[in-house]
Image (cartoon, rainbow, N blue to C red; front, side, top):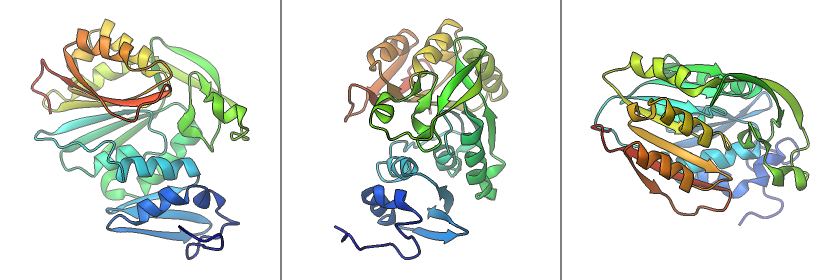
Length: 278
């Protein structure tokens, strides 16, 4: 345990309170091998296994811990693969996969331009991987549309087509709410050309889009594009995993529902049993 007076070298509680609000997770990240942090021009940077990231909110500390401490997305592939990230957020997961030599190309989709801008900063901090990553300020769904949504930069990982997570509003945590107009495209219209562009690689699709995963999976199923995907990494929200598993089984996928699910969120991995897989 840290004393109340404890401060990390160069990271003052006054200037970076969010670090200390998630000190448990920040400490876990620093306990990993090959991890260092630095502070420059009022920004905290974290370097993990040669990957460099900016940290601007307490939520980002938690997400980095999920990826690098909990190994939420640890994938071993015997074949080259394409990574499609729907819910790019600050770019942490896409960079994690881009660091894998087996990952040939990544396509990241982010609904909000402010969030995408931070992802671009993080990608730019890793120039050896940047050329492997293509990003789009775009959401996926059942149909093309423009909508106005609530947005919170502090909790950008908890915003989507259904607005900001209710508990953040009711507890007064999201105090920077504003409204943003965003673009949503029919999922198959966007993903099918990408898949056709890479006939010799496996396709890995990650969905972490705050409730849109149900519409996306339904649309990919009805358009027969889902069957062209090899692996799905899904964080589901609000409606449970049963609907997703039903669609996946219909399309020839086996699924693993991981532990520690709650009523609101959980993780599942699905493998296309009709393809050779990854």
